[in-house]
Image (cartoon, rainbow, N blue to C red; front, side):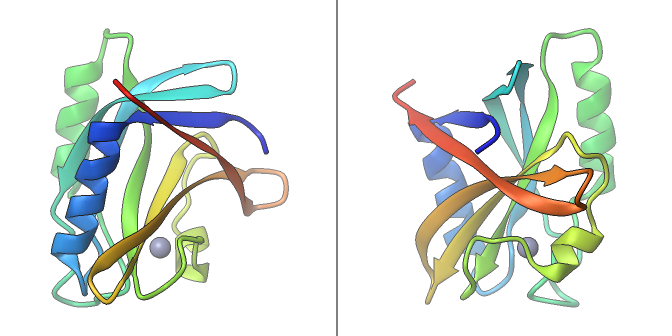
Length: 145
Ligand SMILES: [Zn+2]
């Protein structure tokens, strides 16, 4: 394991609910937070419409305008975009080949929620290892607040 990402119970439930609502398509969104050493703390979960959900149910694309607006809003603050999340309908919460092709920047955290038959089953966090060009799982911690 290399690092940890922590999110609150409420943020965890938010992603869970979005993943179930989007089923059988993929939900997606951005994770705002801060990083200290290898510890990533989520302060805000920002949902985005999956702008390609009507073309392909097994892919996602975050609305670029939401990304741009968020970057602008966070400029000068102590928080930044630390990653994003999406769901895998009827697939395990591990990054797909398509996911690996879409990676940009080694620092982002990928949260993936697995949904089976419309019900949330699991959430896992991954980070790209820039040397190996592959994903590595990182620990996920759900906190009370
Ligand atoms: Zn995926």
